[in-house]
Amino acid sequence: LNDLPTFDTAALRAKDAAHHLHPFTDTRSLNAAGARVIVRGEGVRIWDSEGQEIIDGMSGLWCVNLGYGRQDLVDAATHQMQVLPYYNAFFKTTTAPAAELSALLSEIAPPGFEHVFFTNSGSEGNDTVIRLVRRYWDLQGQPQRKILISRHNAYHGSTMAAASLGGMSGMHEQGDLPIPGITHIDQPYQLQHGKPGESEHDFGLRAAGWLEAKILELGADQVAAFIGEPVQGAGGVIIPPASYWPEIQRICDKYGILLVSDEVICGFGRLGHWFGCQHPHINTRPDLITFAKGVTSGYLPLGGVLVGERIARALIEQGGDFNHGFTYSGHPTCCAVAIANVQALRSEGVVQRVATDTAPYLARQFATLADHPLAGDAQSLGMVAGLVLYKDKAARTLFDADLGVGYRCRDNCFKNGVVMRAVEERMIIAPPLVMTHDEIDLMIARIRRSLDDTL
Ligand code: PLP
Image (tube, rainbow, N blue to C red; front, side, top):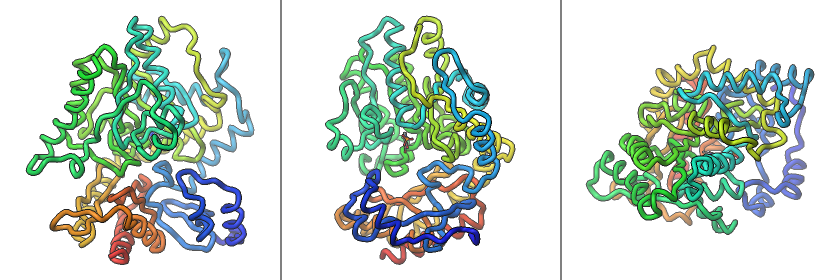
């Protein structure tokens, strides 16, 4: 930190408020207090321009899986930029990093995933998913199978198509969405949809049954695919009951519907497996896997779709040109960073350690927060966790959304040196996978203090 230049925070805030339109932000709120200027990161910590140290409980935006300050990732980018900063993968050319990364991803992917299509982001990955599933059914001689089923409160990205796949009502309202051919079922969130006395197991089966009902309503021969995040992330870390995903898999199999696992958050070790669908709690066999974020630990933008055998075979053997792609599909510098990232996750045993040590420890420590008068239902899976803020825990009544208790709690967290995100009644975290036990303890202590300050 000593060699950091000094930042004129007031000037930066003024420029930012005057000229920078932030994603998912009310610009007027920036005029009042200004944005916090983040200037440095190291390990699981970030620092702002005023010198405050903050534990990054959200890994940036669910992406900095390896933590900040990794020289190996910097070196990989520097080397590639010196050798060949950019070339494309159109018109029968490739680059060494794109070729190497595609092979490496097929090594770590679940069995049957030998091919990858590269994008810049998760949103573009999910746009690509729509193109792939519709192309697949065209090639199968079933062009009427166009509909993708997703879930309310899902987040699949911000392009017109990805936001349509997502189930965020606030996004749909502003964009005249969804686009045609996309429909939604309810999410498996027991607090919202459970019946009194219903077991978690029974609720999971009932929630999966909404997919079957929707398929029957639409006609199975009209449905192309079902898409879901193993654990809904931006929706508030909604961890489904263990009975949910196997039943979804059974229903997809029964009607021959493609299953898409959006692993933009859950991929690259977040749940203690390379991909979330491999976690025993999820345990699905998707046809397509969307990824982004953790593939480079966020050091450079990269996303894509892992394409399972039946779709890849149809595309390659029958498809001819696939008329889809981006200037930066397979960007060599981004791919070089991804290779270094995957190699580090592997050689340092990070994914394995999450499964056997870090995630179980986080689960135990995070669960202790449920004894706080404000907090309940503290749950985690791998390195994502969420709890509910209750107005009256005994009666299980929630705060009026307008009161902004979650935002107050989030702001208290920031003040106390930890990033935590507020989603409606839920407070959530997704810390870097490399977090130590001591760092987890400190993060939990800071969250507890912030809950106290919110009381
Ligand atoms: N899918 C999921 C599950 C996500 O969480 C996100 C981003 O948060 C996206 C897709 C969109 O990714 P990107 O922001 O890289 O476009």
